[in-house]
Every structure is written in structure tokens, then in C-alpha cells.
Length: 94
Image (cartoon, rainbow, N blue to C red):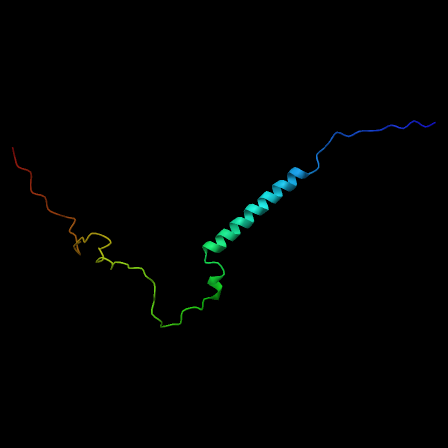
């Protein structure tokens, strides 16, 4: 009679761990997309018609008038010609 050998392989897992990780990542990504969609205005932002040109702005934001513009740099008056050869007074004799 022929002799049969049975080889048992140790359990390598059923792959459930990687599937669960992929599923959790998919659920978190879907929740992030839904949250961003709702924060950006939801489906209502696609149904509103754009404002016509010339229509008054109905935004309820008050912005103070800008202060008078300050000069970007200090005002410095530079002479148009500079005499470099200035005569020095003679040293006093001692």
C-alpha cells in the first residue's frame, strides 16, 4: 500500500484584518466627503442662480473705510548736486 503524507500549514489568517482596515478607511473618507459637502452649502449651492450684473449686493458685512495711505518710505530731500571737493580750513599754527 502507498503511504500518504499529510502536510498541515500553519494558519495564515483569513484576510479579515486587511479587509476591515480598507472598510474603515472607506467609511472615514465617505464621512469626510459628506461633511465637506454639507459645510460647503450642500445641494442648495447648485440650485441657486448666480446674481445678475448690476443687482445690489445683499451681503451683511460692514467693512470700515480704509485709513489714509501712509507713505511707503520716509520723505528724504536729496540735493541735485553734491560738491565733494570742499575746502577745509587751514590748520591753526601752534
